[in-house]
Image (cartoon, rainbow, N blue to C red; front, side, top):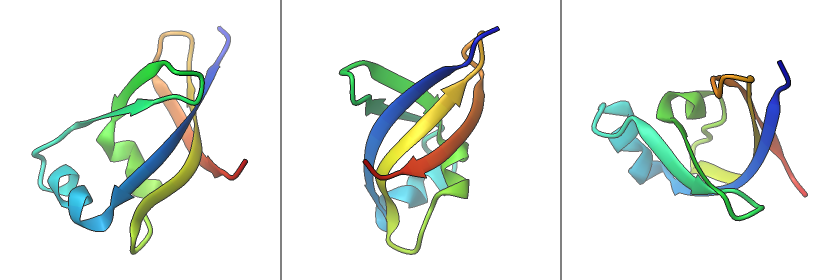
Length: 76
């Protein structure tokens, strides 16, 4: 099955990430660079969080069944 790659710009300050860590929010909703609305598990952000929060352009990879595979920061 072919992987799907989606690019999103995220600007989430550290104080907003608290809701994810406290379990109040479990899904991130973001607009992809191509205009699609993407939903993905908030826990995947843990690998890209910095002290200020999550900022930048990221590529998310999903498998053929739309299951999350990876997230990587890319700067275009």
